Length: 247
Length: 181
Image (cartoon, rainbow over the protein chains, first blue to last red):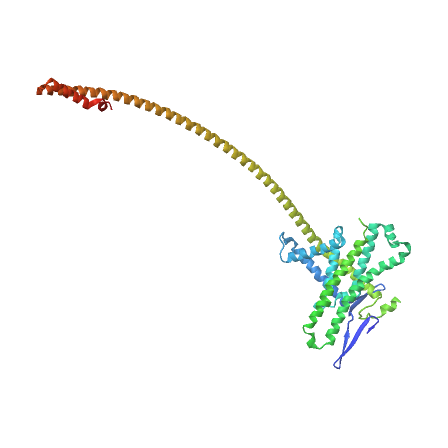
């Protein structure tokens, strides 16, 4: 049962009661002024994934001078990755917004690896609501910033009065709701998969834990993970590109 | 309110909507910003720049190849025109040579014909001379034979009639046909 955000269950199978916890363990915390910063297992997982991505990027940077006109092996993979993400940004946001590739490319890689990290025994960072919320807030601030800078404050403000002035409340609420709908979609899918897998492993006898979970992992971790990474990134790109003035 | 919050130890949990979530979201935002800057600097920008440079290089090479192809095509057309000209010149030379050879052939044949006619005429003249010479020789021989016969007639005391008969018979036997051919 969930009490004050804590989900703990007790499952009884064949007379044996097992306690299951899906909580994100607090590893450490520190205070800056009146604000408390908590480092949880999910945040640590996210930093580990970021470290992997940065190490990969450093390796690419070091080997870039050896890249040839006829790619092969590692170079092929790197080119496919960067070109694929660049095309993804170009096709979703439009050719003139390809400069956003580094941000949305990084965002997609981070969410993708975070969603798939459950396969490697890590707690998926996206199963902590702070992670999708933080990422969605970046999208929200980018949307507002580029909306104001490209349209001008007056034109941007007029957008909230469409189609007529009384709709201003609905438009403001709709705008504020975007980061929450974006973050809850990702969080719900990933935490749902995490809980289901946790329950499966805790409730079923050992012989049902051989082979069968791979299908559940394929759907809940791989399929849902890739799909949600794609959806989150694409929606973020649509929000940001939509904020720009039409040309 | 905040003092109370800070006094409490943070608890492990699945979900919450409070200051702790917002502060963690701030950590995520800062981390994401750092990741974006680093991946942009180390991965996306250099690789995109490399790809753009390669694309430009390939485009230049393709352009150069197109130019070279056009130049080669022009050169080919030029050479073909030259070859046609050469062929035409060759045909003219050949035609002229044939004409010259034909004229020469005709001239040679005419000269040969003329020479042959001269030779034939000379031969005929020679034959006529030889014929006249032979006729003279035969006449002389006939005279000698006649003289010889006359001598024999005399020796045999032949009668005048018999002598004449013999001479006539001899002359008839020799006849014009016999000694003129």
